[in-house]
Length: 197
Length: 197
Image: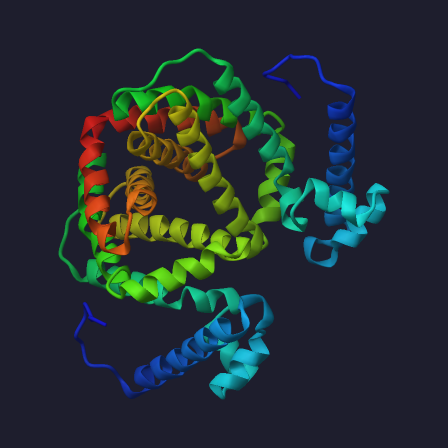
């Protein structure tokens, strides 16, 4: 997996990352073998050889494990965006333009592993609880995008609007893309369409 | 509560509506008294004096009951929109313009009962599962709006985009509105901002 940030990783960070990865891999194996509904947090913890307490240090609940990869992507993009020297957006159009490359970067990263992406959404489609959490995660992306703009000095009301519009482009692409490989291109197309409104 | 459609109600429809209402009221009472987490479907069914089977004829799960009022609003607005003689939207801008009054009508209806609206979101904020379902319901609104446009002959790719943009205006308003009474005005303001993109 590509890293957008190449800073050195501390020993503690590395240890945390590996434990987290072990939990995710254990969960993926169990979900695939027994079905999402038949796997408990205790099962995942046991399979990953960690305690329940450790599990909950990394994930709020069983559902969160399913979105671990997306969370990684989002936090990488957020860190990248915060490291850029970009000033405040003075108009809504400028705010949306600042978000465009970030949303496309999220799409690029999310669809990098085409098979993993397909499996992820196959699992999600089968469970209303996962579809719901997926929708909530998307709202979290919009909020993060708004937060990035506000961090650059953009007015809150413009930032919130731009975050939601950027998310709308992402959802449009999710609905239109006939394959994961098309996700980024469809997102770009949706951003292009905004100028016609 | 206002009804957008004034057609006569059949006896069966009336009976169904009253049973549904009894389940919702029983659930609201139990959630308020014991907390959402401590109430089961069996509790709700017993309190509403219906069987579990009847409960599941009306609602997929306990979470769905929380969104019964929103579902009612959405299906009323949808029926209203489908009864209007409106042609296909030929541009994305026209598609969004067709959706604008529908989204504002949803906001008007949802914020009619200001106290109920506040209680609804207070409950939702306390539970990640409810926040997630709320986000999923919002996506359902976007899909319904796209479906209405497609029903009028609008091209699918335009309809999907317009539905998501309309939803972005709704979410922007949800984030910006300082009180339920401001929801519709903030939604209109967000739609106004689209022309500056």
